[in-house]
Image (cartoon, rainbow, N blue to C red; front, side, top):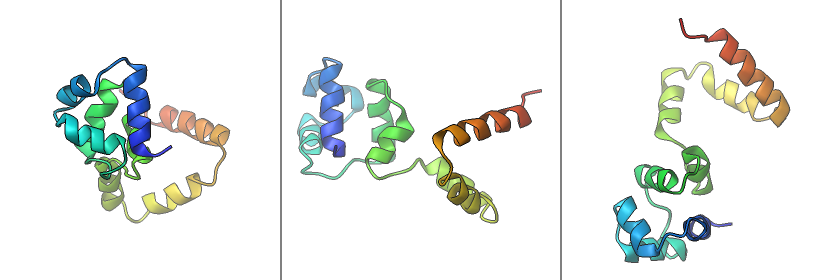
Length: 113
C-alpha cells in the first residue's frame, strides 16, 4: 500500500475527518488530501512523526512506509561508521526470531545502573 493510502486508511479507522486530522498534524486539509491521493510525495520526517502520534502508530514503521528513516539512525551511523553499517547489513539477513534474540541479548548488556 502506498503511503497516502496508508494514511487515509489509518485516519478513517480512527474516525478522524480529513480536516480534523490535518489540523492536528499542523498542515492544510488540501495538502493532506493530496498526500492521501498520492498526488504529493510523503511529507518530511517531523510531519510523519506527528501523523504517527495522532494515529497511534509506530513512527519508524510509518517513516519506512514513506521510504524514509528517522534522522537519529543516520546520526548514529555517522558517529560509528566503522561498525554500524556492517552491523545493520548483517542484522538485515537475520530472521525475525534471531533479531528478537539479539535484541534481548543487547538489553541484557545495557542494563541501566
